[in-house]
Image (cartoon, rainbow, N blue to C red; front, side):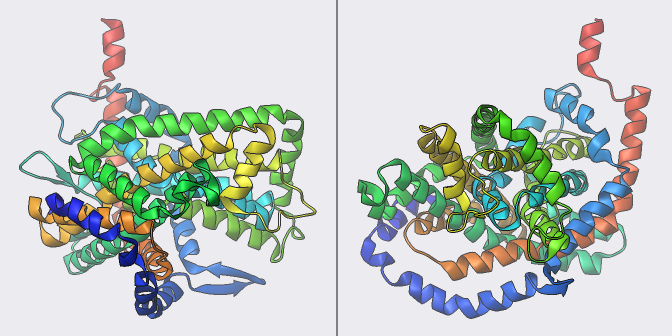
Amino acid sequence: MVSCLPVLLILISQPVFAAGIDTTINNALQPIADIVSGFIFFEVSVFGSQLPLIVLWLIGASLFFTIYFKFLNLRGFKHAFELLRGDYSKPGQSGELSHFQALATAVSGTVGIGNISSVAIVISVGGPGATFWLMLAGFLGMSTKFAECVVGVKYRKLNPDGTVSGGPMYYLEEGLKERNLAWLGKPLGYFYALAIVFGCMGIGNMFQSNQAFEQFVVVTGGDTGFFADKGWLFGSVLAGIVAIVIIGGIRSIARVTSKLVPFMAIAYIIGALTVIAFNADRVPWAFGAIFTEAFNPEAIGGGILGIMIMGFQRAVFSNEAGIGSAAIAHSAVRTNEPVTEGFVGLMEPFIDTVVICTLTALVILTTVYDPSMANEGMQGIELTSQAFGSTLSWSVVPLSLIAILFAFSTLLAWSYYGLKGWTYILGESKKAENFFKAIFCVFAALGCMIQLDAVLEFSDALVFVIALPNILGLYILAPVVEKELKRYQRRISSGEIPNLRKQLTHN
């Protein structure tokens, strides 16, 4: 099927093909999107603030696992670095990726346009105080990621050809079966797989390609540039590049993301720190505003609860802790010890939310943020670009290029997430895999050409509805994770699992 991809891309690249198709699809899907979105993002009024129940579900799980594992998100940092460095990596272990490659692939799926744009929206509406709750939610989310990654590796499926299939579909089915809940696990597994297949086509695909195209237009002359109306051309090229990478499977994706993610993250962090350094005189005010306004009942409508909800919502939407998607990538790691990838998974929300989102907030607060104006009329990546450009006038183009790379890497990761949901439903076969990859690339091209608002709204809701079965499964499997953790820590302490780097040093 992938061999037919050039023909499909030529077909959808014709402007006449795109004309009117978005209206037709939107009209057909909008009623369904409204129902699904209304259900998953249902809000209740609490002390004058609207609280989305899905956010409460996600944050509640993060708080539970943080306490349940006795703040492992603080205690596990050192060991996570040791694992990423390869101190405990033995040759011949099952899996496809190194710890670093698995982390890079998972991070590529969460670090995206949202880290640049959505933080600006939160600050514009909720003020500096929302940043505090964003950081706190990112910190709590580390514990949920730990649990997801442990069971992701423990219940993964090792295929005869050496490839790995894992993620919530598998640990819901096999884990709950082990807990005498087979009647519940298998339906939840299929529900998760089906939802992530549909969800990946929108928020993990079309939205990313659309945002990449918009940033490309900024780089190449804006609305008057040559590419302003050439979404079909950019989309076709982007889809072709994505196809070249994903045709080789997770190992090919990891080879790209393990180089791309560190480059993107380091470049963005250096740029942000440079801007902050140039505005060092405002840093004390920024930190003061973050912590004082987080508890200021007069900061925005809804008071403290309103600010808290806003920060928490952006954090969970950013690092996806509780969604379970990243566990699909982490499951492919080369290890025979499930807990090792749990420790590595701790780093994902820390990098994504605690570091990158917080730096974005500090860049805005130390440059263009004005409490009296609330930055009305300018939000998202436009505000972030203005913040960087106010100090580094040449930074708008590099920032746009980084945003494009963020979107591209997210496309790669989500193609794998959707693929594993697809093969869970239809079975492992090259024909099924290639068919999915072709469809995924077609949707990537379409994302640059047409505005399918209903599709994005529908997929966004599906991506978050999977938190319901995923977190339910994690609660049920929490004792299993705790048992694995205690057993692993005991073997580390006794030297049964040796630190290979220390052994080499002593020898």
